[in-house]
Length: 390
Image (cartoon, rainbow, N blue to C red; front, side, top):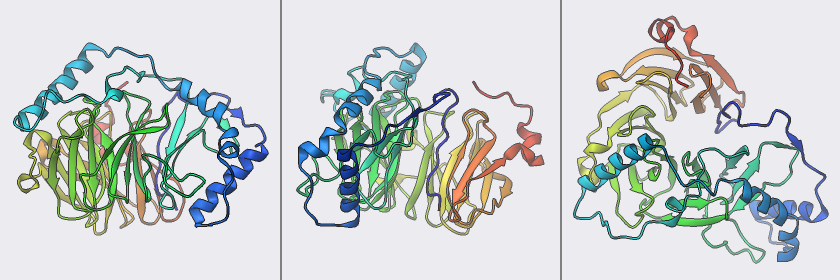
């Protein structure tokens, strides 16, 4: 089955990938040990020196590739961040503490808007480890960085998740920052360049399924949980209680609207998709009226994807094996197309960034499917002449 997918932006990958060298004896042993942790094998582990030897030089090289020296953002981006920050403060002036120290990873200038390598973060339902892979190296047997997991004594490393990693989100402004969601009920923020967990947040009471960074205020993070809440927090003020929305079923996925800094959608286990406006947020989940509700699927709505070229165009995927396209104009959703890709129940869908009307889909049958949504006459009549956003 295909449980998750992601497009690689044009130009991010090398035209000719490097070829990994043959693994050393130490790397082979390390790979064996990692599988022992996954399978619960209690045999004696190799020593720390043996465990680290084959990876140190590679990890250092990778860390150097992550952006560490950028110290500026363009003026419009700064204005957008300030606007959302001001909105957060207005929501709860009594509890938002201006004097709190900000988290260093969001103020140290580490995040270049562009970096030279092509990395993929992978989580698993079998291990608390997050793996970072360099996609420009073929035939690699070990990730270039591992976040969390267990040491040779079988104890969890400092900052590690303790159960399955269910959701991941790269920060597009601070490119060395990764957020993770876990069955251990925690949300964590990692500095991949140093391989360390910088923030742990425990504001959910059940496993956390999804996380997403805001496009306009890159320090603002959404998380959705099986406790049937969505929480928004500012990573610079993680001790703040955040702002909460209550939903009627377990959260499956969520996404910020790329065309509006204030809007996001969340899809639920009961097949419902709900839209919210952060300007209506509250620190209490009791007053969380949605901007709209879509009752469009008969089974879990597992994935959502906004179109980056066409405002108000949203795709939803479901375990009922269908994908639907919605026009969200005026917060009055209307279904404009339905597609059944013969992939079984769907786990993940995503519009392409470089070809915005091409949708990728993956699910139970393990076959990657693609849908040129402009091939639908209703879609092409609405969006066919639209210019792609650069």
